[in-house]
Length: 72
Image (cartoon, rainbow, N blue to C red; front, top):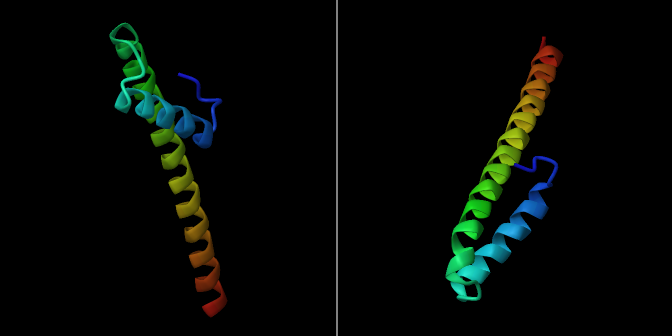
């Protein structure tokens, strides 16, 4: 799995694959390969979103702690 891909790159590739599948522009022979790649891209996107969520939650926690310390 290419974890060096950005969320935007992975999402763009995933969207392209979905479009190909929806428009029947890929052959049956390529379908399994495209679905496998789509699965990998979904995992990359989910991982990136979880990382971002964790980072945002940490920032919010730090901000809340700073506010609590100011009130004391």
